[in-house]
Length: 297
Length: 232
Image (cartoon, rainbow over all chains, first blue to last red; front, side):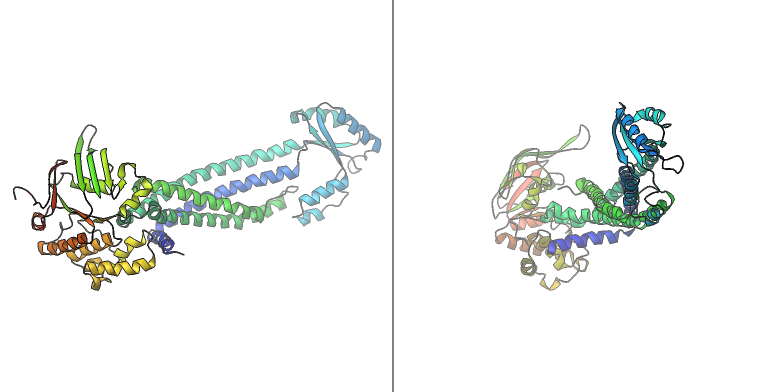
């Protein structure tokens, strides 16, 4: 490390130490805001994961009888049902999913939850026609027409199940996002103020530096770095908090809510760089803005 | 080395109230000159100095310092201009948490000088100002005259072409001031251009160098080998 960088880092740490209470307040407020930000990012990922894998493009599932609750559908009935479905104008595409395919998809989806997979065997899940509609709002047409069809156990609007879930998660995510942004702005203002105090405390030194011809970035960098270090520490703490809590909460929820995949530690780790970027970025911007007038040439 | 041509600078004091700090000032100072700038408080001496270091920008007129046109000088190049200028304050402005040696070496460190350069130049300049034996002392352990010598050492350590001194003897007693002027004279003899704003009649009269007198922002006298004032 060159002498110049040693000076810059040294000054930054001197500033952080000299103003320990403010440093602590900055770290705390960055931590709170980034924890909320991270949580809302992870919630978005959770929603994507659940919607993508859970129902995919399928909007209506027509489950077929298999002798459990109603007499099993015959091959002829099944062929007839397919033709009828494909003849419907509102139907875009029809896919058949056999019992084995349903089982395979289920085991893929829940490979992280072996107890769930063990609870079923290839015969448990019903075969189904998975139907996508030209206009998803026309679900009623399909239900009215096929619910009483011979060999049909149940017609389910997957979208409705999904929508309830989405409505709830969107509210939670947006609330977290709004609070995170407000908190982030507050953190930015706090950082700007802290840096201004630090610059004021060292104004004799910086005025000497200016007059002997130190470059602007050389004068400012210690202060900017002081803010960025505090911001990054806050980001690291929030990352740690999320890493310590989210996978645990997710696995608890996975036990209560069956049939839904959950995010895990990998996603929390992946969100870390974004938190660091946000923490460091907001601190750098606030510090630079704070110094703009104070340390003008 | 320093050239002002029809330079005007006004400050706004209220909405309609303007103070003329420099009014159509033209001054030409050659390389190696020793110049006193005299005049009562508010005559424009401080503004003149601030314009030379580009702390203030002239409103109209041309300012050339060390070969640079200050009106068109980009902000990021201002530090390079200031490396050509050493600045000495009335109140020294030494950093109280640093030793004499550190105060001087700081000026080189922050402009990116090499360690070798620093280790060579700092002892040299401390010897020039006669403070070799005080290198490890803290500023508060020194007399006023000694502190001002440290501040001159700091201003001159990177061998600037111009030394600007703003009332350097203002806080010193007369006998100490004489010693300080000998030092500035020695620095001037090394080829540096020295510009000194002062109220100190005694010094100006005894040195008999060029005197530029400002009054209400205008040059009222520019005299080689001059004295402080006509009236004595």
